[in-house]
Length: 232
Image (cartoon, rainbow, N blue to C red):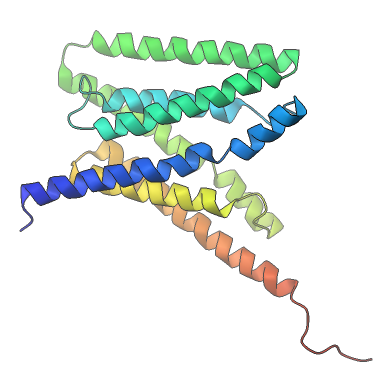
């Protein structure tokens, strides 16, 4: 029988690991934004994913607060850091974007903070703590699941093109490790709003890695030079 102290230690270790692995996700867009800054143009890059990621981080950070759920501060820390990264990327995007994109992204950013303010104020008006927990829990769970499902289009592209060019290995690995860590964290904390979406994220991370190794190896085999040239 595992003691409560050991159980708590395992939970904290999983949460800290999740925070560390999430950092790999947060820094992955840096090469893209270096290019944007260098060219002073957003080119064909879309800023929508960063808007959505910011909203997701804000909602999940709010869910981890003691006002909403019990003993989930590591969820708040990782998503607070994530929100700072996403906001930085959005500001860079707006600064370097052409006027139409600049206006659209600025409006969306204001909309995100407005929606988040409504969520925070609305949840605080709910006096029943359990009901408040359930409302924000379902909301954070839904946004997490949709975020983890977003690479499905990239996975489909990998299968169609038989190339892993558009699915970076370290991004897929970071997603898998972070999801697995928070899956364990949620299990140790008996919190389905954490382990359910991260369980889905873990499964999709495994699929991404499997696709990467399959098509990466296949690509190497197709381009491998023969040991002996045939002579006609």
